Image (cartoon, rainbow, N blue to C red; front, side, top):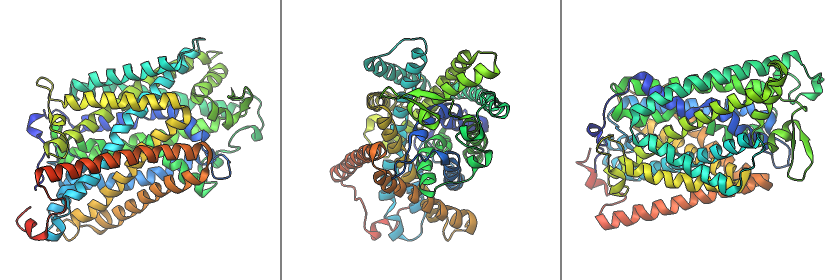
Length: 522
């Protein structure tokens, strides 16, 4: 057993720092996630039934801290192992143990690979399905503004068509995906800056005559200061969905011209630009503009206002855009909403494409290592892409997207949390592996290879516990969504363990080899 780069020679090295970074930025997609997750964040409640939305912005800050701790760990491992090819975290997990001098340490390499591969697939293979569901919801909302009601079957059809469209683009290779990512990032960043500036002006001009008590946050300070610890923590478990993606750069080493230099930089740069700058700005603006003048009709036919309206509407940012545009753009709120919605649709395309590209490349690496079916390791003759993996992911995404569409906000939150659970487990493993990879070596640095990754491990485990404990204790729809997430995660764990054990027995491979068998392995 020895770690090998996953067929890097079969893929074309076309990506510089810009290509590496924008592919990760497309997955983070702040222009899309403000629109998509604002409702989920607004609808979240604590164990008493009170909204946790007051800590929406601070929850993002907490998630950002976790993300940066993890990003530094990914960057350090990418710098140490530039030959990771498409393997990313999966490759790092094996090399971190195989590079140890002590045979008793190296024997755990395959178990580490399995755990990392399971978490990576829970993350990257559920995530595109979440985006597929969000696209169906978005298009249903847009069409609904013209008085057209799309039935559930129509929404399911949208989900499947969109999944197939993204798969078609992914099939044609990473170069085309990079070009698309550059265009998408420019469009969505421009749109969110315009929306955010107008949202802040809307509040400053106070055109609706709302008193300070009528705004969801009476002051700007209320947005950026924490209100409740449990609310902050659970908001952060949702917010991690909007921040993940920085690590996807590490799956592009086989296609990067200088992976040792550009992959670590791309990891950090993408998170700084999209997470630290874009998200904090746009979420501040959206919360700043939210008032009791925002209304929606609930399932019981009653009109609700403010944060309750944001929790009820399928697109509260769209509703805000109409309100803001009518006041500041000469009554053209509807047109402004359509423009923002169009940029969101483009951004969803970009983030789904980036997630699919990353997921199938990790599956490709595992297939090359005989840890997944060989069919997942087949490359397209013309485009050099893992096309079978893409086709299978299209089907999986369609199924998950269908669950999200049919089940409404509870199911959407559930599949989101399932993806996030995989994210936190993967991130905790990567932080731990950073300590394993560098401990006792010449490159060891106490801050970068001990303090930061240990804090990252603790923070990510804390997020996992929050999903389990706070989610279940909250009761109601939050608990239902949590149980759905745990059910999806448990199902994938059982399937993974069964396959792992069965292939080990069939091929005569030890799951944990004896130490003496590893004495010559490196």
